[in-house]
Length: 132
View 1 (cartoon, helix red, strand yellow):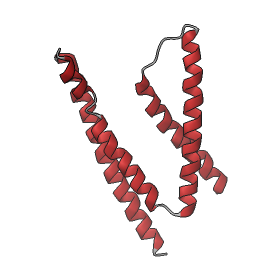
View 2 (cartoon, helix red, strand yellow):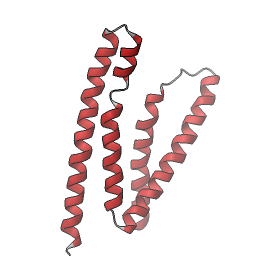
View 3 (cartoon, helix red, strand yellow):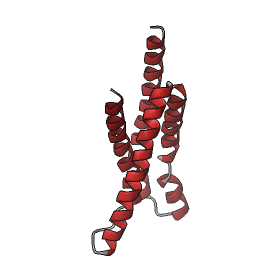
View 4 (cartoon, helix red, strand yellow):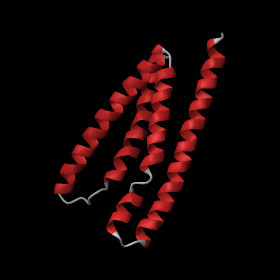
């Protein structure tokens, strides 16, 4: 019974930490994209282009902190979901690489992380369904 309020507090804290990081990431992507296109100096452009990585790092840290706070079953679910996500992302990106050789348009590496996050969500849903 006492675990429930603690679990909710951890979840609320994670949502705040992760949400703030993603909001900062979104703002940084918009700002850096505009700035990269308005400056011609290469060194400056590279520094500005990777600026969104800073809030993305904070999002990663929020995820890692949340994983440490989870109970054993939830950690197992997340581990299996991450394993599914990593292997499915690898297989899909590997397959698309071969399809690019056959003539499909090249895709940016920027699509790999969103793909992996979506597949992580799918993996969580599939794994949780198995344990219910």
